[in-house]
Length: 129
Image (cartoon, rainbow, N blue to C red; front, side):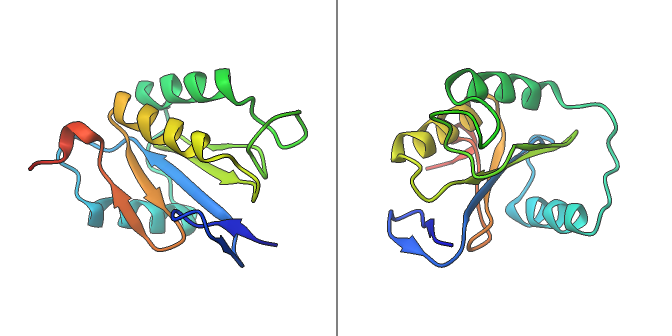
């Protein structure tokens, strides 16, 4: 199976992104630690963060959840948790989907984690010149 890397080239792995609802001031290291805790099955928060609920509603309004729906960019249904949403994008996902994910993450003050290389992208409002 191939996937699309951030630079648009095809790679041997699927292209996976997740958005994280962490407190203001969270660092990339804290996002990576949260990702690792999730992978280990530890989830401390029980109620979904309202920012994630709003992000989910916005992204699925344009791109319905579930890989079997026509026109969806998803390779698998979205994985939702109280503090994050994981998105497995199919190899033919248009670049516009990535732009929409980045825009919506910024609008909802969510950190974006790129599983391919471990990069963390803060919302644009958090980026300082």
